Image (tube, rainbow, N blue to C red):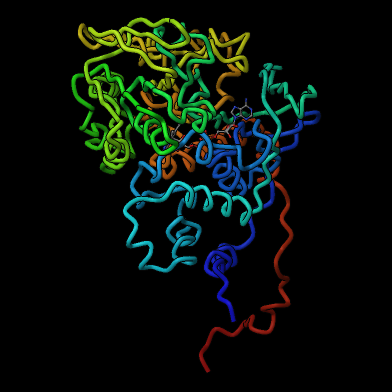
Length: 474
Ligand SMILES: Cc1cc2nc3c(=O)[nH]c(=O)nc-3n(C[C@H](O)[C@H](O)[C@H](O)COP(=O)(O)OP(=O)(O)OC[C@H]3O[C@@H](n4cnc5c(N)ncnc54)[C@H](O)[C@@H]3O)c2cc1C
């Protein structure tokens, strides 16, 4: 008899029992209680958490045409192994048999799990696909949010569904739209000025096969830059040169020092000055590539690393890119920028019309001399439920119903929100916050329900035979 790899997960679902019925009051004319924008690991984990919290009428939408193209794992992510440790809690939150470890061991055995150092990226994608299907989480693929229109106590969501425009309504929105969801991929001016056919960002779909035999420049020296270098080399690039601004590759994983439970659990309660200092410390130290990402590229003799050689200018000359890198002139056939993402709600079409009301760190906190940082200052200053806050109280109260679950929350919460390290703390926390908001918003109805008549479980006949009038012992 073949073993059922899902037996333990099925048993867990049996033991936790059915999800509670939807308790959220219906608002006539409003289609959804919550719309989760993004059906990657975050959107799916929220959908499950909300189901278990009895929050009904939750819909998950994703612009990608299908599961294969949703999320980063089989798309912009090019590393062989996840960057995060294998032991972190993921979307299983509190239910070990829904974890990656349980899923992997059920298919490959305990020894195989013990033998992997970190989680293979493709396996993680396979696990997330299983998680979604096993839990019956429906994602409406091919459904892109194009604009959020505040409409009093709810929102009108402008969607593009297979090219056709459509409007749906919801009370709450969770933006689970990924690393660029509150801004976009950042291209330094020296790369942005090149014609699009000569450059890409690591967020783009890149035709690496077309780089075979070519001279490729990578600008940036964090993990995605090294991953792109590795893939280009494996695809047969003639040479790959990686240009770093710093004089050495960032080697200190600075945020590890705040990974202990006290700091992790209570980060949001820290004073602004400490959260800012932490963010500045991270920013100045730089994002570290993994050891294996560096080793993967360095293994190729046609890989060259140029520290202290940030690009300051570039142009196309005789069909090639010519650039100023540090104090040298360099040339290549194609450039890939592994230069991360910028934060700016004003750049998001979904938020057009009200983005100027969103409170940012620079509005809220003036750093001391020497700690100024424009990049960090552009991050939204989020509330406890990851909701946008208003710059001017009362000017845009609906912002409290837009919850942001992307790395935009990094300065506020100390971990890149949406990444695996954020899941254990923030998916339950934000779900509880949304539950509270929905409950309190309809308090009169819920108060009536709590005061309502409850039918008796039994009548006096159940104990009538034992009712005695004689108090003496026999
Ligand atoms: C190259 C790379 C490597 C990474 N490696 C790691 C790692 O090792 N460990 C880790 O913890 N994290 C890593 N991260 C961070 C990673 O993005 C998250 O862990 C994970 O992808 C977050 O899942 P998510 O569901 O929040 O976002 P995503 O996986 O990015 O999913 C967002 C979804 O939103 C959809 N979407 C976007 N805009 C709209 C819209 N307007 N309407 C509808 N749908 C929309 C997209 O189609 C996408 O499917 C990495 C990120 C990158 C870019």
